[in-house]
Length: 151
Image (cartoon, rainbow, N blue to C red; front, top):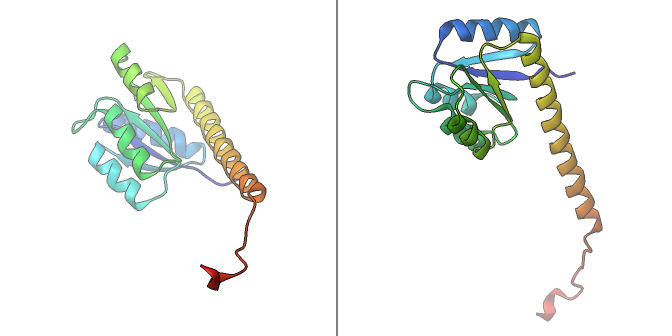
């Protein structure tokens, strides 16, 4: 089994430490960022499988960061984590196609289970798309033009 890389985007150093500890103990590779700009820089350097994004960041809303990260790494699982849930944030997260929404405080076992499930779902979605693409290629008739000088 390949190890997944998780990017933690949170301005609270204690939350980054807690999440890093939980994830590294579960054999994930962890990268951290304290704001949206750092998160985007990290995504340009490394392939990231999962991003855990706080809603309230110093330089931008976490919900805005969702679309920025999707543009950089479309296959990434993006999960909003917030201690300040609101209907507005939840609706924006859904509209920006967040893969998950987790409330603080959270149970570490539940967090790990959610990450594992979302990564498996995303992988299955991608593999299904590849299979459908390959099947479409095989079912598409190919016509060779026999007389290239006859145009």
